[in-house]
Amino acid sequence: MVGKTALITGVTGQDGAYLAQLLLEKGYRVHGMKRRSSSFNTGRIEEIYEDPHVEDPHFSLHYGDMTDSTALIRLVQETQPDEIYNLAAQSHVQVSFETPEYTANADAIGTLRLLEAIRILGMEKKTRFYQASTSELYGLVQEVPQRETTPFYPRSPYAAAKLYAYWIVVNYREAYGIHASNGILFNHESPLRGETFVTRKITRAAAAIKHGRQEMLYLGNLDARRDWGHAREYVRGMWMITQADIPDDYVLATGETTPVRTFVEWAFADAGIDLEWRGEGVEEKGYCKATGKLRVAVDPRYFRPTEVDLLIGDPTKAREQLGWSHETSPRDLAREMVLADIETMRTAPIGKGA
Ligand code: NDP
Ligand code: GDR
Image 1: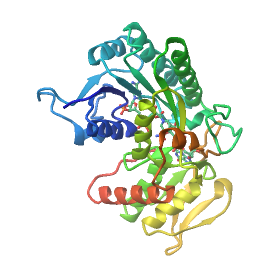
Image 2 (image 1 turned 180 degrees about the vertical axis):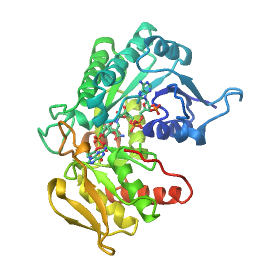
Image 3 (image 1 turned 30 degrees about the vertical axis):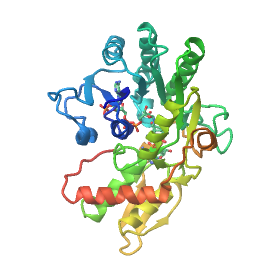
């Protein structure tokens, strides 16, 4: 028996893949929006992909783009979702400094387009809406740990675009009575994490160095601190937020913060490479203790024009009101990611991602 219908934008991304899997397990009919690409972009959802020729599939993919209002309206009309999870975004903070206008279009106005689709189609009372909001909204530290009432201070075009999206969701909830909620999610990672985000960049490099396929890892700010949780647990939180009787905004976080430098040490140790650091600032370098080989160095090209130095979230509201909590510690997360990359790299070719 098929239950509710969900539409996921950004289904080909890390969170989209985990969420689609979760909803299918819960008996949903899942529609995913993917954008056109010149190469395959469905690698993360291969396991749940259903041949479109099967009768009455539980999982279907549709072309669309957050910058294309008509495609969004048509998709909502055709799929008639009970729940929309808006995960699609230009999600890379550093890239947003180079593509600020596109980032605003996809991340800010794209969210508005989707909310307007609900309104234009008269689905305000039928369709619940989940917005992928972010701890990047907190930006420059105002209060720690950061919670739902902490003031926002965005520090990138990405965060500024997500700030608009956050508030337009609140406004459409108040103005039109749409069941629309923001999940203010702190960083969450997994073996499916995009290769240019810092955790995955580190775990892939540690695995590649272990296999003798890479010599060096170049990183930016090693002092930045993040509250890293596991993506699989956070998509469960997205679903719980959407099931709540009353729409609201919730922080999902572990409550633990770790410097990038420490994540590097963990990942390399799990790959069998204990590091020692010499130098400071851009001179800081990580050497393998056993062999003395240089393995990690700072490259200022990865510094951001404005940085978010410290994120640590307080998930008390989600725990008390929804019963959500994380399970995986940042230390265990690092180990899971490294071991997965070591295994994958045993056979797969590696790219030269930034
Ligand atoms: P990913 O970058 O892995 O996935 C983003 C998804 O959005 C991909 O499916 C991508 O498609 C799609 N996308 C990008 N631009 C467009 C567009 N113009 N039209 C349609 N689809 C588009 O992100 P995550 O899965 O990590 O994150 C999911 C959401 O949660 C994002 O909105 C992100 O900003 C937000 N977020 C993430 C956090 C995290 O730590 N992961 C924390 C807080 C918020 P393609 O595969 O083709 O690139
Ligand atoms: P973030 O994640 O910006 O927090 O956004 P990212 O992993 O890119 O950076 C985390 C911190 O690490 C520092 N850093 C580096 N980052 C990258 N990408 N590459 C490097 O070489 C490097 N060296 C140091 C960064 O400066 C930063 O301080 C992620 C995204 O998923 C967003 O979409 C989401 O909203 C937030 O998490 C919460």
